[in-house]
Image (cartoon, rainbow, N blue to C red):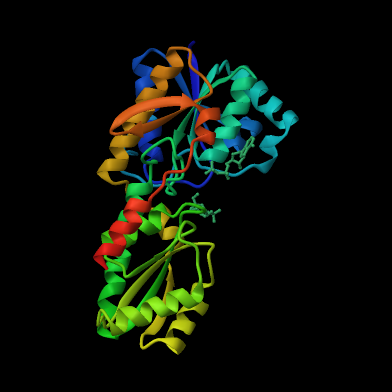
Length: 319
Ligand code: ADP
Ligand code: F6P
């Protein structure tokens, strides 16, 4: 094998650039040519492909986002679109591919592997929703961004006897909310795992006020659960707190990657190149107990979701 490609797909995540850098430099060190595919599967299908040299990835380890650009292309599920992608790879002599993204991107990687292009998936998403890996690239940085913002909200909400309701990202995974609640000392955490009953939230806040004698409160809630602005209004109406809502939004996806994300991305990028050199395909990389490992994407997609009960209980004990 002489030529490999790399693309970033789905929502971007801080640390994707560090992974691209590792893949390019590790590939070149092993005597390979490395090609960047721009804008995910969209660029692959459009033939937006360019060779990357060592210098092309200089100074990017510190940068958030992805220099390759990312995109979502729902049509990539279609046979004819996948065939076009393979044709473009063949035209460049690219025999294998590293796909940096989430589980959706992994499905595309699996399809390409079945069509003869060995693909390795690297978990690049702030959501931490790839169960076979303890952490995904970008989660640590996004969490740090949440902490910085919630700490600021705490200053003002404590001054005004308010309850700040903070909506964080995570798609269908509550990890960002749960880890943020623990590390910010939030009073309440609501995630897809906890479920949401408005009355319970109101009662809990009343309890926090009357029994725990708290003069302010922070509620961290995962996105896609309820309208946080309305929830804040109901908190103002039904508790002694004045409610205010903040949606952190895409701020969580940006910023210079943390040391942990740079390290994780670098280790995973280098490992992906080694796997491809050894003829592996249809696998994705993870980290388990600080060991970099891989497994078949098919198995990874079936991997049972991590049960966070211990962390929810830990949070509960400390409120
Ligand atoms: P993520 O990779 O972060 O989970 P998405 O779910 O949006 O993000 O998936 C990213 C892209 O992966 C999609 O836009 C599509 O191009 C591709 N993809 C998703 N599901 C499939 C599938 N079943 N088969 C082929 N490609 C897919
Ligand atoms: O998967 C990363 C993520 O930021 C999710 O947390 C969020 O639900 C989604 O992407 C937002 O997507 P978009 O950038 O398309 O609004």
